[in-house]
Amino acid sequence: MSDCGKLARLEARKGTGMLYAILCYHDEDVVMSWTKEEDDAVLAKRHKVQQELVDKGRMGPALRLLPTSAATTIRNSGDEQLVLDGPFAETKEQLLGFYVVDCESLEEVIDFAKRMKEGENTCTFEIRPMSIFQTGNLSGKETLAS
Image 1 (tube, rainbow, N blue to C red):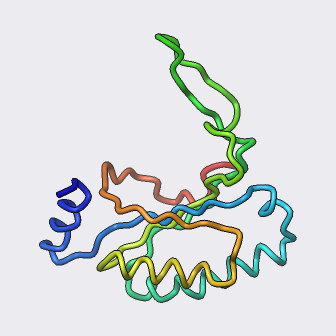
Image 2: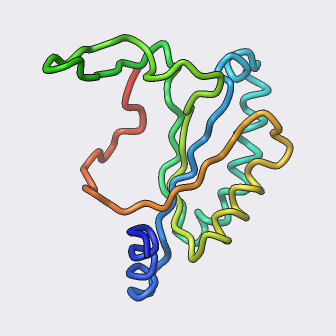
């Protein structure tokens, strides 16, 4: 059994759901071309779907990443660490944000992601089970970058 499967079984035994990340990939140029009204409409539709999990106390943070032009990448070149401007890969679709949700099953999170994606034909959602490595403490931090 995979580590992921073992973790899912462990979580199920505790009587809790499983944490999932829903990674949102999109063509950044398309998203950046949206008007404020278009962007607000997409987010409003998603918020409506998210409210179901919010009401159950199972909706974690939903985060939008700043544009890839704000990214910094650290990679090794031999023994040297290089700090580079920009994202790690040149691809058409970029990771632009993610959601953290607590669902009882993979089927439940797939259904949730499909409903959030309805009518959006240009984005891709990738679902990954998660485990908490370190909870951290960012109380009061609604905006982490300005």
